Length: 244
Image (cartoon, rainbow, N blue to C red; front, side, top):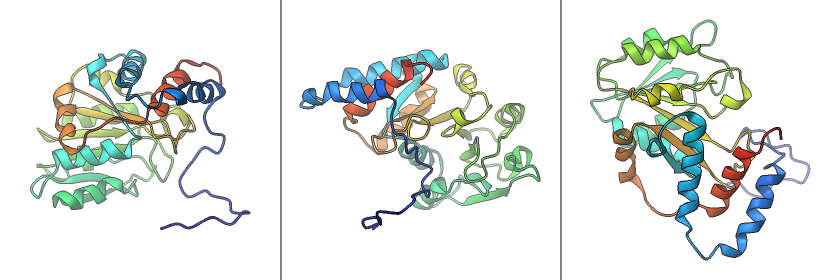
């Protein structure tokens, strides 16, 4: 448990955006509070449609979640097992490893290259029975990029049946391009997005998984229920607001 912070504390441990959401998003939240007695599932669908249009995929290739940690855990739970490992860069974001422990999967840590990129050749060769190969791009905690061409190589040369999980939580802070076109081409790729960082919504919880419908369907077994209405309306509003 984390107790109250000292009044002069500077909190830097969670990569949060202290500016919070943009004005259009904040106004959207205020406008919807009085309707909080309804689930309003249609707002979640509207968000999925908006994100799908922006990413060039069909609407059913997007499933909203409360942030990206939830779908990250679901992907690992769905596609790893005692016989199907979780492959990640080292150092790398550790949440996937914690999920792998639940399934009894082995975590294979592959050192980053001397340029602090994911060593995709070594990751592809790490385990012929890999269940999930995790690429965080930009990488957490190093902040470094793995070139798009290398991610494409990994998708083309990974072990048969494995999933390439691309975590794009920090994409908006970099020059990297999204790999949503690989999803649109029906590759074995799932993308994670969160709006906790650039969009300033860490406490409001909004994110998504982008992937083929048959892959995303496997994630549904690990939870159900309505998602925060304020987050979806805010995220949809923020994504349509340019130049903030």
